[in-house]
Image (cartoon, rainbow, N blue to C red; front, side, top):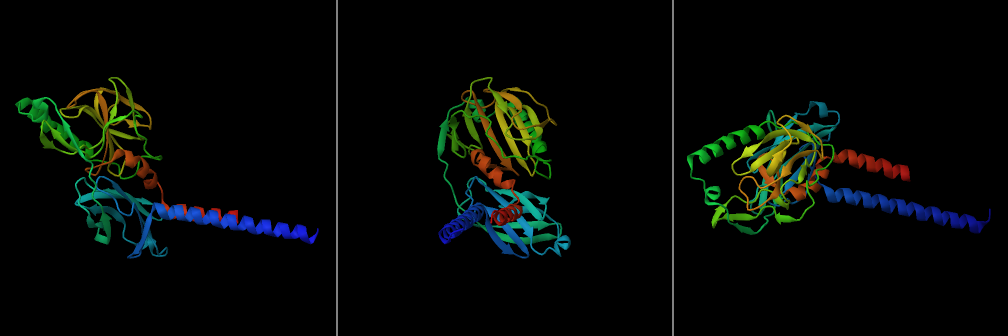
Length: 328
């Protein structure tokens, strides 16, 4: 073998090595962009995004750093954030969970308290930014905007009781193995979070998104879960609510038909009803919402956020590290 040939092979090897190192650095950078990492009180804390906005979620994962004492560490059970309690799920090497920022939360720093049965285990300051989703004015029937009839008030009272039961018993673990998918791909007729004025009077902000849909369009479940409500409510019309675990619920409102029952275990994409115009509406459409421990969040953004929720970041880091070594 000539010296010139050996020289070219050496250059090729060095070029290949440099490329693999550069690729590994890109992978590490991508992982860093997903989660912000903080080390505090014996835990490595992963959060995404770094600064959640009002109406958005905060993904949290906690890893106990000391492997020898990990078994002796207090078991974490929940998080408290902005006066709401959010569940934590034990996973290999730590815990994961999701918190949510209520609509109307002002820009500022708020404490996320991680709780155990013994009390507060650690406190993490979280910077939150405000977000203005705009305003929407709608005209509906007077009795739908401000009910006055005794039978309607009684129906609304019963509905609230049924909703409380539906939201009161979520699975303590994630029931999904893949990220959520929006139920329809049709244009939006009303976005998330808008301040609503019905017949000129302020009402609650829009807690979901409205998809354009004629009466009778099949509506699939956004992800696997358990049906916790399938009935007709005064405001929501025919509605299906699915529990996805960790107090994550998806809602499908104003249906013309319901094709599932309470207690059904549904799969992602399974048809659970058909679109319609039941309840308080101005026309046929599908209202789709995501509610987490009593807080409505932007469902379209949560489609992406649910991918990060399914990750166990320290396992991802270890796998990327192994892949990088094997490539070298």
